[in-house]
Amino acid sequence: MLWAGAGGVFLGFLITLEIVARHYGHRGPLSDQAQELIFAPHSGPLLYGGLALMMVVLTRRERFIAAGVAIGIDVVFFLVRLMVDAHLNFGNGALWVILAGAVIAVTRRTGKARLLLLKGVGLGLLLVTGHKTGATWLLITSETRPVVLDPYVAAADHALGDPSWLAGRLVEASGPLGEGLLGAVYGQLPLAAALVALYQLRHVATEGRFPGHHLVRTFLVIGLIGPAFYMIFPVVGPVYAYGAEGGAWAVGDLWPSALPSIQIPYPIPFDGITPRNCMPSLHTAWATTLFIHSRHGSRPVRFAGTFWLIATLAATLGFGYHYGVDLIAGVVFALTIEVAMRSLARGWERQGILLVGYGATVFAALLLSYRYLPMEMYRYPFLFGPLLILAMGSVIHAYVRLTRQWDPKPPPAQEQDPPLIRAGKLAAERLPDRTQQGAL
Image (cartoon, rainbow, N blue to C red; front, side, top):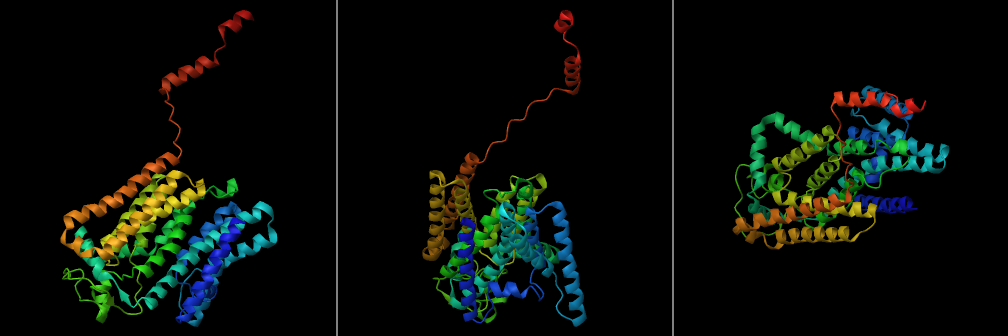
């Protein structure tokens, strides 16, 4: 009933977004997803990531069949598009197989097996639909927020030393290789999350149940709640507000070669196309969550989580998509959502409630200071810069301290004897007992 209720609420949310998007002349998440059953998808790797998440509930034989059918369907679609000279892409097969899993669950499975397969299908569809939902949110922000608050954020960002301008010059100096690598990392963050989630959920088929908390839960909630703050605090980023990408709407072609002249900030009008998707940085929030959930994995998984976090932070700043203060807000936002999701899975305890409240308070204080104290932050960077880092660090410290109490400690490793001593003990165990020999 809980899953059904959550699914009904999410479906209602999607229908609302569809109606709003249609009002502004765009396709919503539902129609955009339905179109990818036939037409070329926007992101083939994301669709196959969703299929992989669904397959965690299948047996090994069923996984081979599902993957083979998806690839076969994609080959047919590719050949047809090649014949009619249509746009070439892949991923339709993955979507068809995910939907086929729902049909099989309803018609061929019963009891717990049906529920498990439906959960797997829902997980795969949520990853894909969540991406579509975020894109629709961005369209709505550009249509409904005619002015942006970039001058406020640019002034506040001076407290951190204008990191976006510095990172932008470094990325330019790295050349096409560095830009290409960071662009791939930035664009395929959902796929990386799917791979880490696959590692977390690798035992679902054998155990017959999902763990109480995993990466996809937090990842999706961040994507659903985060864009609401884009409506409250519309910001387009330095590459648009102060760079060539902004065209005639930009303050000037300054980023990243020259710092803007900071005066009393005021809202500036901007076009109806560019998304207002900076405050907070959701890419930073997602990468932070990815890093957190990779900590309990193998060494390659931990390394991948660390690399993706560092590269995502470098890309968000280096491409001019975000200011430094956006990243601080994104980290606090991610940790607050993560604690809330873990508390929901564990049962709401006092410590978890307090940390959620503290994280929400710090997040609200950050946004209010960016909006109402930007000139003070610009004039006194040696005061407000450390304060911003301290605010973020306090949330990180509280999160680490709490989760160490929540996470079970691994059993202490038993000390093993050297090989020769172990061999001697084994030989002694095999010798007959002298007392028993005397009795015989």
